[in-house]
Amino acid sequence: MDYMEKGLGLRGLALAFSLFCVCASIGGGDMVQANSIATALEAAFGWDRLAVGAVTALLTGLVILGGIGRIGRVSEKLVPAMAVLFLAGGAAVLWVHATAVPAALSRIVASAFAPKAALGGTLGYSMASAMRFGVARGVFTNEAGLGSSAMAHAAADVEEPAEEGMWGAFEVFVATLVVCTVTALVILTSGVYDETAALLAIQSGGVDSSMLGSALSAAAFSTVMGAWGGPFVAVCLLMFAFSSLLGWSYYGERGLAYLTGSDRWVGCYRMVFLLFVVAGSVGDVGRVWQVADICNGMMALPNLAALLLLSPEALRMIFQWSLRQKKARKGQGGVSGR
Image (tube, rainbow, N blue to C red):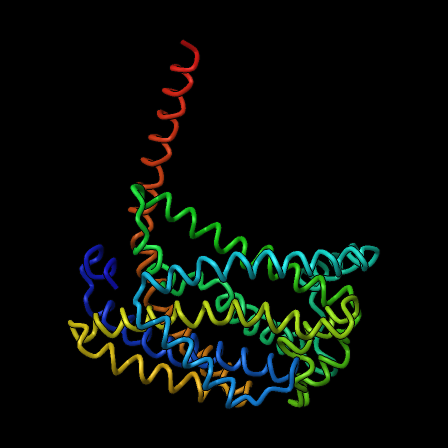
């Protein structure tokens, strides 16, 4: 919202973005992550979803009361641990199913460039569904284009904005091209995904929970880890979803502060946020995801417009930063040569 107002002079666009940001923090970043935690722990350990939601809300409240500093300290420990743990587990599964990896990669590429119509349906139906879910889940995974993570990067203590932007690009690379690719390959190589059954379920509108999210991933990891597959996925998901909850609470606070011009309503927002953690934990997963997709779409539209208009300025800053980097390297080379 700051670069919309100060960079473009479009306060109306900034206000619209802030409103959508608050909605997305509740409907998407809050309810979806809480739902993911509750369903994963219920499937892995049989824990009551309402109880899980209550405990998650309590732990979230203890962290967000400390502001962005405490959120950052907790997240910087959770996220690397989650990434290393999950990628190590994924590598182990892929090692066991190594012979199936080339076929899985071929299947991904072939389906992307030569999509097949859903059984009995039209090509338009299958393409529309693939685009709709692919874009929605991709955006939700890395937040690219939403404008949300820009708030976290703006709070970083760095000398060069362009350098922080590179870390933002690296963040998208790790989240999507590494973590999500490993997840997809684990599912495809393990044989737990039945494409024919999935297409039929999509057409009939009867998609079973075992075909979605953590349940499908847990089944894939269980082919190698046995009974530990479900708990492994649940623990990884818990760390990722909890850190996302913390981040989105901060985004929502910043959006509300911009809308109201002060921080006086932050306390009320935090209470509402925590109540929706509990509500999301016991909500229907399909409806929760629909709310999240709508909120993310509303948030992305004004931000993408601003990014397009500010792209010349961003490219100029990257160019200037690159020149300074080259000069610094030449200077270091000259000193070492002497």
